[in-house]
Amino acid sequence: MTHRILVLYGSYRSDRMGIRLAHFVVDGLRARGNDVELIDAKEVGLPMLDRMYKEHPKGQAPAVLETLAGKIRDADGFLFVTGEYNWGIQPGLKNLTDHFLEEWFWRPAAIASYSAGRFAGARAATAWHGTLSEMGMVVVSSTISAGPIAQTLSAEGKPIGEGGKSLERAFPRFADDFIWWIEAAKAQRARKAPPY
Image (cartoon, rainbow, N blue to C red; front, side, top):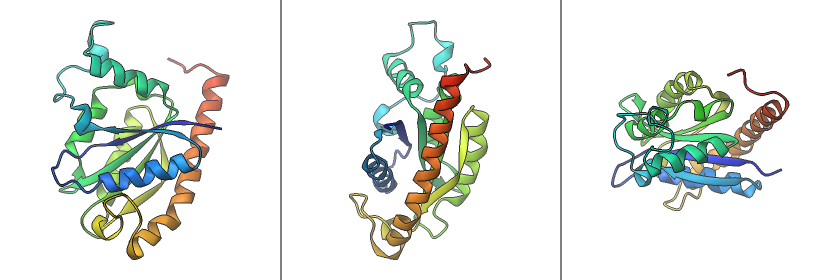
C-alpha cells in the first residue's frame, strides 16, 4: 500500500549539510513504495510567522500557504529532518511548522536528526517530540540520527564510513515503525471521524 509522506527540512544555511539526511530518508521511503515529497523550508520561503494559515479569511491566504496546507492535509505522515542549533531546534523548520495547526492533526510524525558533532542532533530531536505532540501529531518513538553528518552521508545522501553503515542498519526498523503508525492512523481516520 502506498502512503503519502512529507519529509520536512528546515536549514537556511548556505553550506547546509542536513539536506544529505533529507535525501537519504526520501530515497529510503520511496524504495519501500511510498509517495514521498521533500518540503524544504528554504525553498518554500515563508515569512517569519505573523499570521497562521487559519487566521486568514477563507480563500484569502497567500498561495504558498494554501498550497502547503493542502499538501499537509493530504499527507498520511510527516518526517521531520532536524539539525541542532545551540541545543535547540532549527528556526526555519519551526517557522514553517508553526504556520499550521489543525492541518497536522491525527497523523504520525517521525524525527530524523543530525549535527556536525557526535551527538547527531539528539537534543533537537528530544525538543521536537513535545512540540509535535502539542500540534496534534503522534510522535513515533523510533528515531534515527546522523553525526558527524559529513562522515556519515555523502553530498548525495548516500551512506559512507562506519556512521553510514550504522544509519543503514537503523533505517529499516525506523521506517517499519513509522509505517505501522501511518497505517494505524489511516485505519482509525477511515473508521471514525476525529472528535473535533
